Every structure is written in C-alpha cells, then in structure tokens.
Length: 254
Image (cartoon, rainbow, N blue to C red; front, side):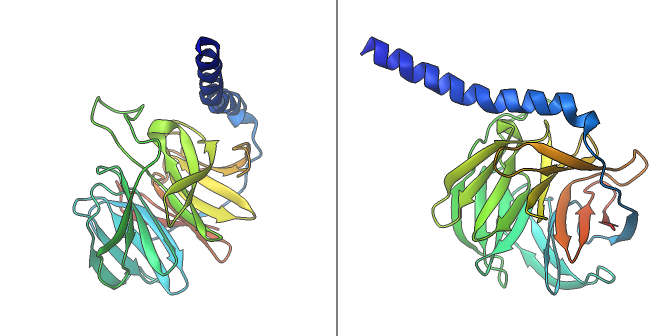
C-alpha cells in the first residue's frame, strides 16, 4: 500500500510539473516568436463602466461590463450603438462567449461559469470553474475564477489565471476535457482563428497564437505601451477585436 501511494503521489506531482515546465520553456522563447503584423484602429468607446470581455456574433459584439452585478451589451460593429442591454447574475465577470443558443459568462468573483439566457439575462445553469484559486498577481485577496472564454465546435475553452492554465470544457457537464498551459501570469481574452487559440496576456501587452493540443506558443501580436490595454478578445471576418476595461476603448486589429 505504501508503495502504491508513493507511486500515485509521484504521478500526481509529475502531472502538475509538466504544465509548469511547458510554461517555463514558453516564457524563455516569447521574445523569439514570429510577430504577426496588425494595424490598430480605435473603433468606439464601449458602454458600461468596465468593458472586460467581448464576443463576436453575426449581428454585433457582446460586451461584458465587469462592474457588479454585471451588465451585458450587444452593440453594432459600425459605431458601438447598443442593440441589447441585459443585467446578469455574474459578479466581477472577465469572460464571455456564445454557443448552444446561450451566453456563457465567467463570473470571476463567484468562481462560476454561467450559462445565461441572451434574451433575459437569467442564469440557465452554473458550473464550478476548474483551477480557481489565489491569483499570482496584484495585492493579496480572495480566490478568483476564470477570465477569457471561447466556444469552439460544441465545447468551450476557458483561461484561468490562478491555475496558469487554459481548459477545454464539455458545456453540459462542466467536465474538463483537456488542459494546456496559459501564456503568462495574467491570461485574459480568448479567440479562435486559423485552427489555433489566441490568448491575451495583459501584462505582456500581447496576443499569443497557441497550439491547442499542447499549449505551444506559435506566434504573437504585440501592441505598444501607448495603445489601449488588452483585456477581452474576439475574432470576426478576419479581424481581431479587443476591449480595454480601463480606457473603455474597443479596438480592431486589421
């Protein structure tokens, strides 16, 4: 029994060490990544007080306001004018996506991922956030949950900074299907393009192109210190859109 327990503990520790080793290797190579050239355009100022996440759909952009209780606005691509204004049950939300006829919101302060009715804002289902815990940045504080969300082929991906990980989730059960390392301490918005995940790392002021099979960093988009900061991220018709919770700007990368 002792040998069995020891073997199980070694496998457990090895399982935890593998993502950390992959992340350490990725950090060493960030400066050597190919740069994806994009021109930044300030599109419009977002509604709400702290636009922290966004998701593209055919008829507009969903933007999540982090101020609790969180509102969600759907706005026009052309000018940011509001089409829909919903109050949700999310608290301190940092991620939003759309799939299976519903909004999915990362309620960061309650450590939940919410399935939300896009017509009423009411919660249809609630799931525990995998990897929730103490963030590794900022002043000491309580546990925190997820940041970015992205729906891909009937599943969703979620970035969870306390775990330094991005998880693929089965939406009906909340079961973790796959885990890869995040690109840094403060992984934020997620998007899907060209068969890859793209993830914001807010502190790096960069968007990393990530191999979804193993978390390998493939390339990056780098913004400058003078540009609005990176929080939420989405992709539509060949264009990355991002929002900055501090300046309120929604920007295009074309």
